[in-house]
Length: 466
Image (cartoon, rainbow, N blue to C red; front, side, top):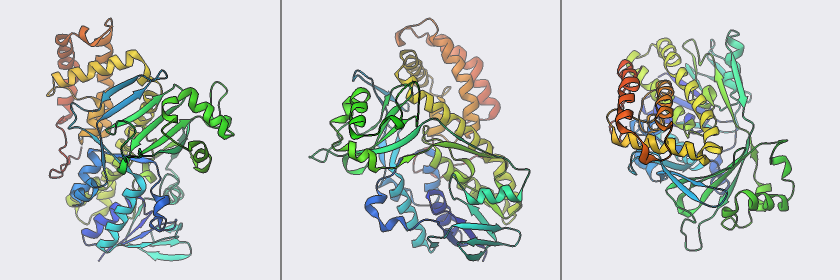
């Protein structure tokens, strides 16, 4: 039986271990940290994730979709909070049946680790990858030499597996680019009656230009709140300016007043919770011969503003699975095709996530941008067989990310032309919209063979390698 070793027991590593075990491989999973399940209270407080079509497809293929649904909270759109307290709702999909799912990262991780162990995967904690010798089939985890036939690096944005590949392949390149905003989490608890204090089916955003506040619903009525703010700034507020509880309260009263009364004691919590950094990782080679492959954040860490980091990681696994079915034990071919097909997708969603960062902190509060989104929603619902917004392609279909990115460039030109000279959605010329779609968008879709159909949650897994 072939032995597979995975470095990193996070979301992607735990899921891939479970999947490989179900296929009959001998799987060992090594994690540098302690077992997060030992501190369930602390484990329940981590940045929330969004599960969409890519993750749903992978979970369905692994036979765990029902268990996943039990920890998901559906989210159907964005709720923008203006500085004056006005609310504007923006649906994600064509209707409320198209929704995203909010889930606690730690709760999802615990669920996947439990499922992997139940399937027979051996998980070793406090074991960090120190050295990797793929040609010899040996890895050193904190002084313990572990043999393997195949090795997967799922050890995060700072991946020691990726560092090892850079040493093994000097021609390879790596880029790690941090954005100019850090993040910090807070909690908005459920009301005394156990209800949600705000609309529960929305991602809430307080866009303020250089910074923003976000809220995603949890189980049992609470919201995970995330502040994105420059570490330091000469032109506006920054984390470095918030040195006392009084500073924090004054800052929130000025910019996020509507949330203050719903977060009792948040000033103290602000200084108790860690401050994190966000960045994008790109790597020119994801594989080494037929021995090692990078998956998840190890290959393509991205900022969280498209809600696709975990989804892309799960799709990595599904690409590998599909290629294993195509090429059997020819791991050299599996890894070669995985790198060729999925790496452009990882790069594309990384770029789109950065674009969404600008959109969410700044543009969602702009009236022309909101009109543009309203026009797109109108033409998408009017011409559902001809048009699918880029957001919908990324979130509700299995269209490769890089194709969705290219389609979005065409769509942006169409939308700019449609909103030129109009002031409201009532002024939209639908005949002109259809003509532009027929002239510019459909030829691209037809040339690439793109299927705009929605991925139906829980259906038989579908996947198209392209």
